[in-house]
Length: 292
Image (cartoon, rainbow, N blue to C red):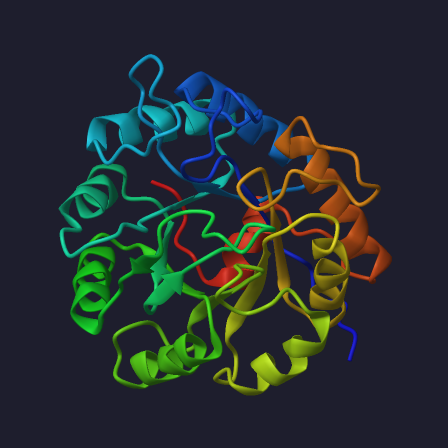
């Protein structure tokens, strides 16, 4: 079941809500651009970008200010012009005007499209909730509104799937022409109330995809994510890591930059017989428009 197809590597630079006072996540445009350069030098073709609040002391919080998004993305393009930008859109609640305004202001080549709802839960070791139970709500009308904005701005949606029902829904969306057919899919594995980060699940999940689906795995966790990355590479999927997804390298050391994580991911791909795609090759493989 191995594949020699070139692997597209994505770096998730910073994520959402991680406190930069506790973990080395980039916040400012300059920091994000520097980390994007490190990721590109290690083999990444795509950077998945969350925008953080730029007010002093508030960098642990997200920002949906389109001017913040523009400054961050402009800094990345100035530093590493060949990279593909994939902008986050995940937001709780029915008001998605902020993410939509960011899409219209930046017009990235790709953007995340959260393709279904999830009770976002986690337990502490004493079985208390790690945070108050939260519904990450993505009803069909919200998905359709995002897709309309993406289509109008030439943005390719990457459908994030936190469970198997969401993955199966993407096939329905594609058949209804709500998203491209074949679609782009991210299997988000490792969220405690979603799909587990178990390599044995991958063949079953692939069976639920439409023919020709572009797919990757978003592996959330610690050292246990690396066997999942390896199996993904063996089965022909694309690969993603970064400080949004994990802080831990395969040997258990804590990463201090995105470049270290992408370097480890590139080694996983090449050891599985998958050459690393350049940004230009990634655009061709993923059917993206050229920048500009």
